[in-house]
Image 1: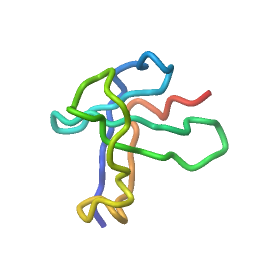
Image 2: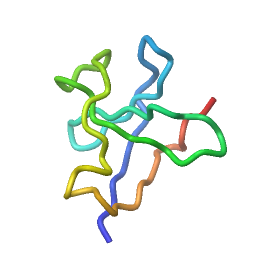
Image 3: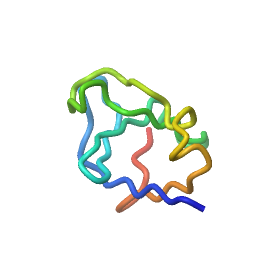
Length: 75
């Protein structure tokens, strides 16, 4: 099974947690505790960019196991 390791980099201007993996930025668009993460790429790979493609639609990460470093940032 493919593994996506996301390292926490902070929160964007909408208070959404932003993560990085292999130079690519990702955002959890529904970081509520008790819900499954909804991870999307960041448009233009910009920290403050809008959410772009959900990883669920990306063939590379469709069934990937997600690891959050140091942990998932939730509300």
